[in-house]
Image (cartoon, rainbow, N blue to C red):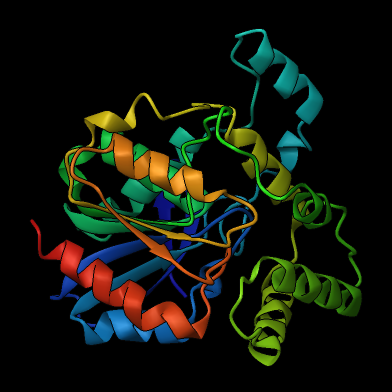
Length: 292
């Protein structure tokens, strides 16, 4: 896969489809790699005349790692945030948004449809208000604004989901499959597909340190809810009714804050992209892309 030199680092990316088609930039969630986008999802986008651009965020996959930054002190970051101070971080979500724009520039794309899932949705929102001229449409899947007043996710699931991860290959795969089952929602759990993905993910790049630094990056800009009302791009918000990580109210808040945003709540959907809902999501993204 190719790499782009962006903001003094390297971003690993992959493209699918005809470069003359509608460009859509897919932004993955916390600690995820570009291979986390289901193949069927990407193929359906290509079939709907999109040129798909996927990439590894910094500190994940095959993009540049920030090893020298060490592991952030999450308690000190939280305390600084509580005091109203700007914490000392290796990088911020705004830096990660800059990376995405840098990748578009490297590909000579001056406007694109932007689609982010979970943490990637936060980054996508930041792109939309920091770099509005680049955004043809905005598509946010199972995301949030980081507003601390929102209802929290399921505490039991959160406790298990953010527990320490085993480093040994087979133990890691088993544990992640177990966690994926917890957040899958009410659809039939596709264990074989999930296991294959987690195996490929581990073999491609096992790097838990980056997850902590990406999580720390959410402290800046923190709660972006007051900022997203400035977004003008046609916006689609897709959220699972059964999402145990980002409560459904997170999706509702985004849709009610961005002028003209459309909200689609999917029954049975958790914090995942099961095969059963891919066609519906791609169809909605395609409709949103035609609003420009």
